[in-house]
Image 1: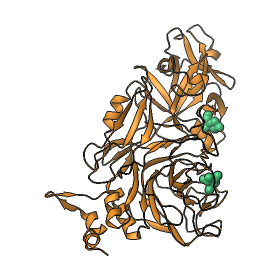
Image 2 (image 1 turned 120 degrees about the vertical axis):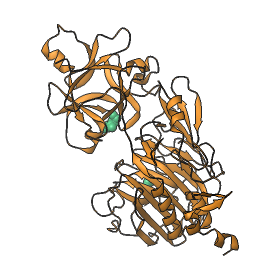
Image 3 (image 1 turned 135 degrees about the vertical axis):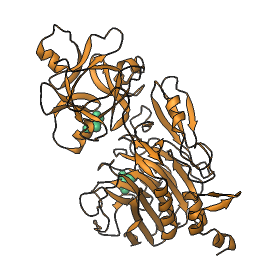
Image 4 (image 1 turned 45 degrees about the vertical axis):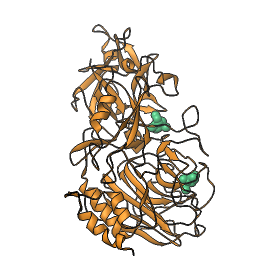
Length: 504
Ligand code: AHR
Ligand code: AHR
């Protein structure tokens, strides 16, 4: 051990290093460096991961003029300047185009290119994340995470300094433990450099979700597992490792690390307490030695499988196998960052149990309301002299969000137990089947109207999409996306509704 490393032990750093006469709290990558397992990539839209970092955290692109801007910490080592995002994105839509690498190696994450699976963009790329889907506070200061919907993904296939072959590495990510699904694969970590499945052992990434095709932990999930390619592993050979628990934390610290012959999964509550080790031991058969390639993925599988969902707040990749003690110090820093939830909605108030009607605001269409004809959600001309039946078809009961209690669901006034949901991005009125997918698809987060008045209704699970009328039919539409109903022309007006008490 060199004198330098023995001086800068993580325990010392975790307590704070004297710098220029004042105390500076060590950030995750300072702690990893002190443990001789430095970050080779550090990604976060919420905060600096080095105590001295002042550079850009992420890049946004807005729909109004397609210009971009960078969001940086408010000061060295601090929380992201979310007010700068709110100003830049005011009255329009915003996408996260890039998550910068804070390590200095320029291992930035950008829109994932087509791989074994093609993305939904017309050029086969994955979608970009919406900028406002994952608001949080850190020590009371607002920031935004990266909300990954199915079809969304980020990648860097030309990474400098990452582990290749059987070399040692570590990684952690802070995730939303309540946002997951069973599709392949919400991952963060090391993957193929050509976006194709090149075989067992060509990946080593954190996976989070309740996929049971390859492996599982105890209970019904979701679990932290490792995506080692052609397999999500909760432990060594056996499909199920009951020491890998179902996660219920809102904020989750997930860890995967690997070195020749050994790997581990660890995890804990990002808001309090310590990490636990869910697995540590030998590699599964066929995965020893490893054949890591060194790309970095976020939100997708190694071959660009992009059906999964999840939320990423921060994470790093290291060179070398971090000690448990180093990771424990990182966890203490994450807890000290004080992640907490904040409101998902803004604009006009919605009162649970009340009724609401949504009037179109697009010039030429302001005699129309969001209504339904059978299962089809559309806009229809409704006036005071309309029939009660028509007024009822344009009236909705406000319910607590079925998929997220911070948002709302809209039950049909004329068909009790049926709600507005989206399916293949078209709106339907459908009976609640009790499934997680139904509940999430029937959850909308109102915000101040995109056109400057009234209300816009963001799809909770697709925060790039809002309830919009297009050719008098209802969709969840993204501003300038690939479908005809995503047309940028008239987007803000079509996605802004004037609300009133239900017509009937
Ligand atoms: O290992 C699980 C998945 O299998 C990988 O992410 C993907 O590349 C393959 O389809
Ligand atoms: O509407 C988009 C998606 O289409 C829904 O989330 C899903 O249920 C369906 O496949």
